[in-house]
Image (cartoon, rainbow, N blue to C red; front, side):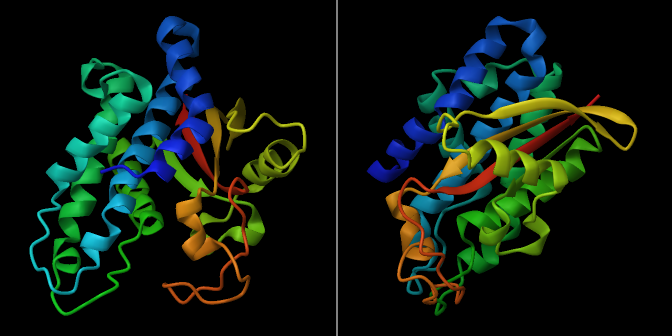
Length: 251
């Protein structure tokens, strides 16, 4: 079940991405933007399933949780449809958008199924299969499946990055600091551009994400105190910029 905080977060954070989805569906010239928006929304939708099931995953008394890759994907597709008003499975699987979205959905199933032993371990409380770890693993599996055609990364302002693999590159950092952290930037609005990547053009989109109330148990106050993962809390407040989904589509 999706909690209220998550639904509020969809409305606040996903508005710009949903707008891109709608515009992309209507305007062929915006294919890259629509594809990137699809991928960002599916990642969010699947991550929400893992977030909503943290109590179940960390239940030390229960063995088989029934939280298989197929179950997680079905709920992710439902979340995606509810938040965008469109069925991701209706996208032509032979189109670029369909191929990449299905590669991402396959990655979601693979990651959940590969972690069944941890999810279902009895006698163990915190499993460390948290939304951030899940998203990183899905993005890595997706990039392998996309074979150089596309990549997804969840990054953040430098001072908020917990895993060095998630550090923003120079372009991402410039966008975060000059756009998303700027006082006048419209909250939730993605940024997109075609940039040179090693001598080849690539479409890049970054979609900002903000802390919801449910995020603050790990990222809130008191700053510096240890959260459940034994990492110091950032002292964040609800609505602060907490991360960015960065998507690259090669041309």
